[in-house]
Image (cartoon, rainbow, N blue to C red; front, side, top):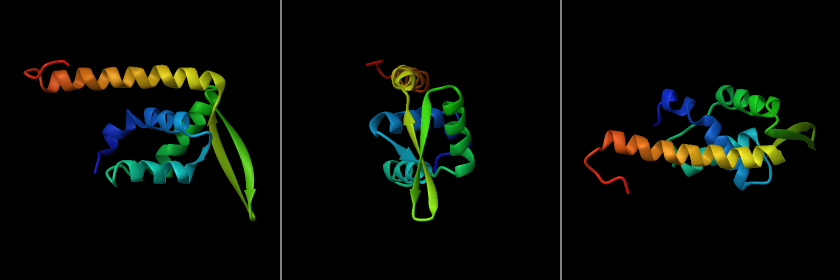
Length: 112
């Protein structure tokens, strides 16, 4: 299981990656996809996920669509046009960060 401390710094990146690959997703769907992709190593709580989604919406990177499913409202999250380009940059930045961290933690291996 991945610690909450490590996850906290990467949650926005995870959400951006999923939303960049899917036209729209709702909260529970995001949590299930993360658990599936991580083979159970990462379990997002709604208390961690929704503040990130709301912040992305406030910043203009995500917009929402409310859909009635039976008697319930489901809120879908989608990247805005600005969100798509911003997400691409943030994902590239994260990949570079991982490379640097690998080098710092394993300096005797080549930086390939």
